[in-house]
Amino acid sequence: MQLSHYNETEFKQNDTINPVIKFLDNISEVTKTYGSFEKAERAIKILVNELESSLLKETLSQYDINVKMLKKGDKIYHQVLREEKTYKTSAGEISIYRSLFRASGEKKSICPLELQAGIINGSWTPTAARLGLYVTAQLTPYQGAKLFKEFGSFKPSKTSLDTLARKLGSCWDDHLDDFNNKLYEEIVIPETAITMSASLDGIMIPLNKKASNGYEIEETTEITQDATEKKKPFYKEASCASISFYDNEGERLSTVRFGRMPEEGKKTLKKTLSQAIQQACGERPELKIVKIADGAKDNWNYLSKELQPGKGIEILDYYHASDHLNDAFEAAYGKGNADAIAQYKKYRSLLKNEENGVEKVINTLRYLHKKHPQSEKILTELNYFRNNKHRMIYAEAKQLKLPIGSGVIEASCKTLITQRMKCAGMRWDIKGGQGILTARGLIQSNLFDKGWKLISQCFVDKFEMLADNIIPIRCVGI
Image 1 (tube, one colour):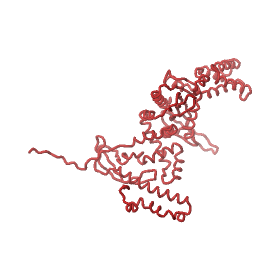
Image 2 (image 1 turned 90 degrees about the vertical axis):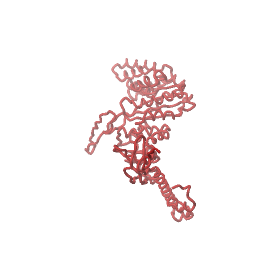
Image 3 (image 1 turned 180 degrees about the horizontal axis):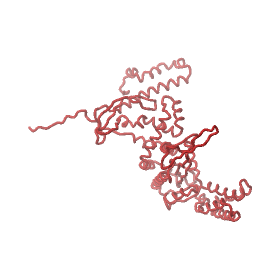
């Protein structure tokens, strides 16, 4: 159907356009016909949706190839079947006849219509899949299915939404290095940025027995109040990383976030963060690097020894240090004791605002340890400050307008992982969870458009049609 070739009479007689023309011709009677604007609005939505569906069906059918033979690469494919199939579009489901082809000696058939149009997971048009992934990144498949149903004719099931996220997440991981390199080239570093911070952290999430990645899953049971057994989830640490850019006043300008499902040593997350930092340093080598994290040994082994080793300033999150300081004074004076509260406030301020304030904290904790030699807690906190004192340069960092807290990564763990992955009753396997985290990371980093372009192109391919009958020509000498 080519609307540009229709004359006025043909345009009005066309089955796709006629209902719209009829509605417009009777627009003056709309209040009598529908009674309320809400009913008229719904009727318009249905009408426009039918038009959209018809146009999509007509357009998608143009990508079908109905010939006996075609070529893809070095292989010749022969048509083996022609049948009708239903596809999910943003306007709802449409059914189209398409051809299947198979190369000699192969068991799997290919569908030129799906490959040329970029059909995803065998049934989703690109726009429908993009909508499905975006919504599923924010809501559970059950909530997403209800939302789409409320919107109108596009009504994917919760199972299809879950499968879609899993498929697209796997696609991203199959091309992880290539996609990451291309994506980082698209990260916009604000012109006024003078500082770049890098941070990583983790948070425990519930896995189910389908989870893999090297973990031995052993679900345990608990007895509920009604004496029935209930499966308890198996928890492992998902990981999160962030890169933030700051101006000369220390104001945060933008943040890029990454999330990964549980993996031994956070290997993939660390590699991803290293690639992104390297790309940013190549583009803007003058940026000051600040590495921020809590006191976890594994995080600092990576930040110090693997992430731009020998470069940047290391800062232990001030708020985590404050928590450890509070624990030490509570161990010495008792929880809620007035002296514990007063000492905590005094030394928290010294730690933050005075140069070498950490030395005063260490001296005080050393004195408390001598006074309470049996307290393992005071000794633990004393060693914590001793081991990390070179990262507790808060007064100097403030003068340089550098961040001293890991609030960005804490917030990232909450918004990127917790809000979606730890709802009541949830259990995750690695592939299903990673599809969600990949999409959420792209969305929260304002990179979803660029990420989607990379993913969607994985499902597009082209073909070369061949003549049905080729007659060889033989030259005869004259």
